[in-house]
Length: 219
Ligand code: HEM
Image 1 (cartoon, rainbow, N blue to C red):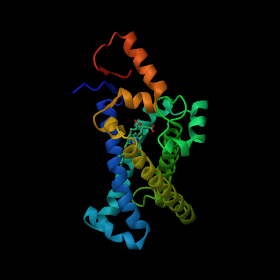
Image 2: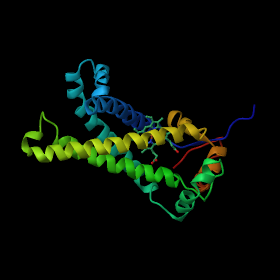
Image 3: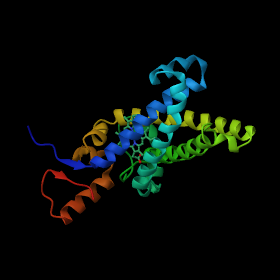
Image 4: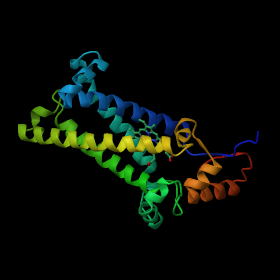
């Protein structure tokens, strides 16, 4: 069988970072939904007891925030919109039918929008979560501020959960994408089809560095 030509998309440290954030997100969504709506209260069982869920939720929240902050530092520079992204966004129905549009770089318009939504939600979740953290901080604030913080906290959580459902769906729907975050590599065919400008940049760098193997690394 012909050897697939691969390109590195994520290094090991980036993948570990991503899956720590994703794991924290799942635990936070489960415990958060349990606090939010009585019908989901049984979900606190995942943490042993409701009391334990209350103690653990904010601690995992801080870990997710730090993990996402590292991701933010890694990816912000790839997530500014350009005119090719506008073309991409205007053609979403066509793209959903399997035709890629625009000279897309490392991320497409949808991924960039998702990145900024994640960033905004993380900032709101973290600041309001700290303010409402009974153990250490909430005693310093008036009750109206805590109530407002918890409302914003729930709103940002719902927006993030909706966003992550789309993020996961897109990752599964575009064949070969999950591999990028599991093994760190994508095929050249995947890159050429979904991120043609990024593909050209990676290949140009590989040529500059005299790389000839079937696995070109990203720089
Ligand atoms: C829970 C299941 C999740 C799955 C299956 C998943 C899957 C993926 C995959 C496959 C990629 C690579 C996409 C590409 O290179 O084109 C990716 C990128 C990324 N993911 Fe996730 N992810 C999950 C959760 C999360 C969560 C909870 C967050 C943060 C709130 C997150 C933040 C990111 C970021 C920042 C990137 C970098 C790409 C970008 O800037 O859009 N992911 N994810």
